[in-house]
Amino acid sequence: MSYHQTGSAGAGHDVCQYGESRLWFRGPERSLDTAYMVCAGGDETYGRFVERPFAAILEDRLDRRCLNLGSLFCRLDALCGDAGLFSLLNGAELCILQAPGVLSQSNHFYRVHPRRNDRVLAPTPDLIDLYPEVDFADVHFVCHLMRLLQGYQDARFEVVAEELRRNWVRKVNDLLGRLEVPVILLGLRVLQDNDSQRVPVTVTAEMLDAVRPYIADCVEVAAHVSGQSDELEDMLFGTLQQPMAEHMIGPAAHKTIADALVGPIRNLN
Image (cartoon, rainbow, N blue to C red; front, side, top):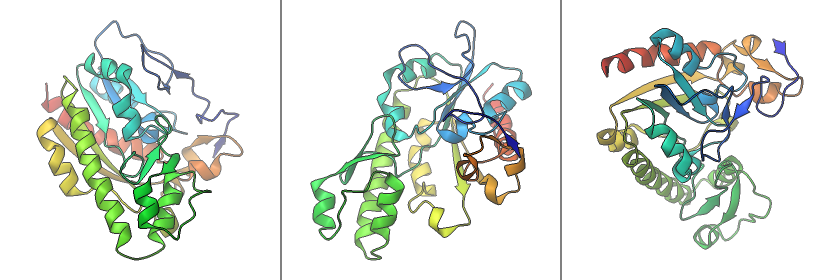
């Protein structure tokens, strides 16, 4: 494996900002003066700990400028709430949008940080009423919250899960409705064999079907994290970052994603 002295972004890559967006994207900064397509999304689109994310592979394969607008810790609320990002996306010829996860969104039961959507700001009174026996004082991350609730193994968890699914469809439809360019939705399933790391509520086929009227195409890809796919040796990370790198997808997964996207992109031309 390759060790690098890195910052929190991983792999020593620069980060940059564009226009009025408050999000930080993978650098180096690219010019917006000539035609471009974009890949937008979270950690996987950014390509954390990977030298060449799928956006860079697509640029080479298609011979088209492809901006990587992946942003670390960026989930559904960060995408929906950044007006500057919409300007960037609507300035593109085509947008490949990684379908955001279900958990990291404000809803009737909890609120998340507007940009670091993996962080819980507070439970709502509805969640406190639903789980009166739970002390939420030390819960700061969405995954911790969901596994805590899931641990009670009763019907209440499905009440929260169904709220998240409905809210996701509503927010994604609103997001897509604000885009003026063709959108290919990337339904990326990141697979974890470890039960303790599996996401308890994920995007379903029914949820993808509900947003299909607003997109040009939907491409679904499944990929194991590098710690379970023998790709860790090909990752770039600092000496203390291996635990994080093990839960990111590796370079072979990025190539698989690019391979799956090339045909649908060409079909739009």
